[in-house]
Structure formats: structure tokens, C-alpha cells
Length: 284
Image (cartoon, rainbow, N blue to C red; front, side, top):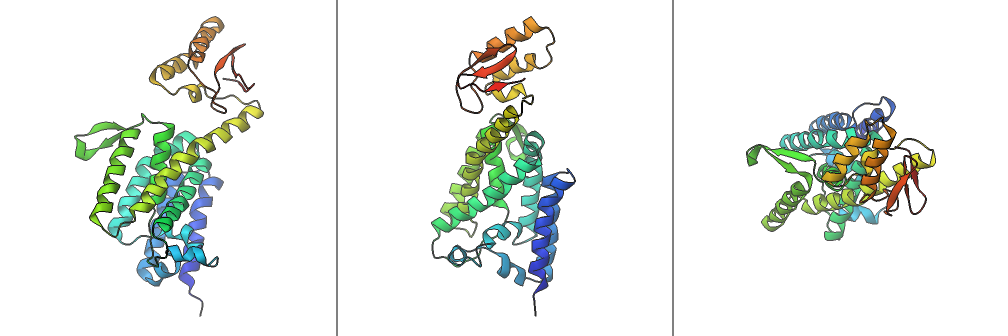
């Protein structure tokens, strides 16, 4: 007899990822709902974990390698899923609102898989299953830190102070080191692997997106050139400025330090647009 719960779970996974693309809704919320539905399936039939959890040995069997994907939608308990969903909604919306649902989903999925691969690399030959969305969520944190390093976070246990994203990454890494030294059953390797994957792929995805828009001649948000507080201040002056000479003066000032977001070369003001040494022209 065919076990229906794994099939239903995979259907929920796919639906939660496709729905925000079709309906243009929040991917963070859609994934969160999907996680809770699948957790309900787990409570009905605990064998679901055995079917969809990931272990390093699964990579040796192409028929079982899909678990590196499905495992990131399973959780080991109510506290586990509530904590992960809380963090996903908290930081996921910050990133998704800025880069859009398609790129957010790409970072989430690839980071989750990257976290699983790092876990497998560190634990070669291990047949213990690993589950949880933490690797994918860690990738979201990494993406925010690399794209928007000064994005503030509020931590209740630090007297409600606003903590920049790059500092949050340091705190996160310190926590993973503590977990590793404590020898718990928490897959810290997947957390670090997901974080690193998010840091690596987020700039690449954003660069590809910008290059496609440049090729189509679309307008580009001038903020993509602003990496420092001073550059952000200048870019903020450019966006609403309607007087051409004043706007050009601000563009000249930004071009003194800004770099091309596609190739990293120096840029200059080119007839009210921004152009780099390699010929990339940006309508801003």
C-alpha cells in the first residue's frame, strides 16, 4: 500500500513555493504556512520523517538524494518549528520586500541545500537523519548581511538595541561555535553552510538581475550604487531631484567613489546616466 503522507507533504512543499510566484504574495508567509501543514502531517504519521529526512548516506543513492530538499520542510517538535517560523517571518520579510519573491525563494532553497551539503561533508558516512529549515533561514541572514550590512535588528535580550546585520552574523557564528563545543544534536554544520551559501549567492543573483535590466534599458534604482552611509545620503538626494544641473552635480559626487554593480569598475556621469569603464550604462 502506498504511503500517502510523503506524497501530500511534497505537494504542500511545491505549492508553498509556487503560490507566491503565481499570486504575487509573501513567500515567507507561504513557506511558514507550508511548514505548519507538514508538521501537522508529521504528528498524524511520524513515519513521514523517516521518508523525507536527510542523511549524508542519501547522497550515495540518487533515488534518495531528494531528501536534501525535503528535509528543510520538516521539524522535530513544536518548539523547533515555532522558533524557525518566527525567525523566518522576522528576517524573511526584510529581504523579500527589497529583492522580490523569486530571488528570495532562490536564496532560501539554494541555502537550504548548501547547508545540507556542508552537513554531509562534515559527517561523511553518517546515517542519522537531519531535519529543519534552519540552514535555509541562515542563508537569508547571510544574504541580508552581505547585501544590506547595516540593516538593524532588534534583540530583546540586548536591551532592545538595534544590531546591524553584520554584527548579527558574528553573534550567530559565536552561537554555532558554542553549539558545536556543547556536542548537542543540533546540526550546526547546516547552519554555517546555509549562512555561507546565502552570503555567496545573494550578490550573484542580484548582479544577474541588474545586468538583465540594464540590457533591456530599464531604469535602475540609484541605491544599487550606494554601499556606504555617505553614498546612501548622496543617492537619496539624486532620486527626487528634478533640476538637471543639481542632479548631475549629485551624480558626479556619487561617481567619485561608487563602483559598477555588475563588474565592479569605476563609474562616471554620462549625460545624466551612470556609465562604467566596461561600458555598462545605467538609466537612474
